[in-house]
Length: 231
Image 1 (spheres, rainbow, N blue to C red):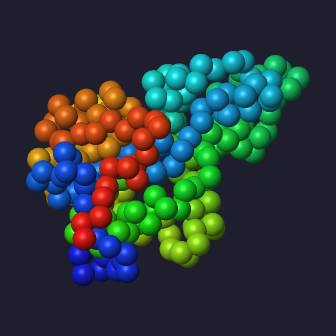
Image 2 (spheres, one colour):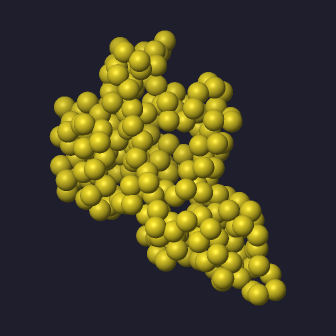
């Protein structure tokens, strides 16, 4: 989105903390546990209540395996994902597609709207703001619909970013070099000018390997802590 069409902000301009700010013109955000909190154990428990065997949370995210990896790469459809999960349930207790998708989406926690107000302020302060997420179609459909339904500002999800990049749409995922390079190419931005923020250290290391600046965001720190008033 051109700078002239970026949302105006009546609040003071923002800048990155001094130790992060050098030469940075663009910020590339991860989504889960950066802009939206997630809790994998909620989906693990929801699947178990439906009669599925216990899944290791890390096998679902971030170290995806099997059908979870295929879904995140956009190589399995929603229908294939549902069928794969149904095949793990007892024959006499097969959950419906709706039950399984609701369980899968249970890991997505409520929005913290101040994080999206932050994005507006950053764009009004002259930063390019981009999203790069390892995600999948059922989650995307859910979190975008929830955002568009509940956002008190009445604006759609993707209006908060200059560009958005999703692993399932790109058939690439972090921390593989290809996804960073393709996002940079499509966005028309330089790695040396761009800070990548992610809660997964391996993803930050992948970004550093292709020349991006990187920051590992670890709780209890939140994305709001990385910025300060420029006034």
